[in-house]
Length: 111
Length: 115
Image: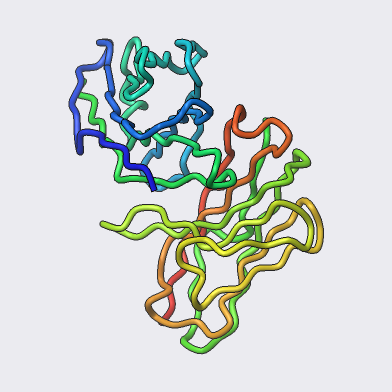
């Protein structure tokens, strides 16, 4: 199985942008990159996904490196509600659709 | 919005009991998944299903079985509950046709305590 590397924890101030990095150096050309987050006492929540190009949605932006070996989830203005564990998950084509979770990054947001 | 509903938020069962955890999704998704989440171990895949009556083992299937008789419902069964199955159980679903260019939707979880 391929490995992802994320910081264990990060801190942010409310109203400031947050850049959450992820390394996925063994990803191949057909593997999508998904991001999920899990708020305390809740199930994971889909945030965003992409393949090659940068992606934006109402929750966040996803910047994918040109070589696709890393990506960065961008929260443009962190709120207290964004405090959660963020998981970067490559979806490997040869793993038949399974989401394999790593340890993720615990983001804390200070008022 | 897609909804994945898990029948119970909290459940307490006795050792040796047969336990059913139910999950229902309302968006006609083909793929459904069961995970468990434990402190320090993260989310681990127990079983998944690509279609009615189909099932595949995940990473930790021992002590569990599943049933998928209807497309919208995926049940996780603990044949004889043990204390080491005390955990948070999470169900998820996904659309197969658009996979992997589609997000997965999770339920809120069932916190099971086996005493």
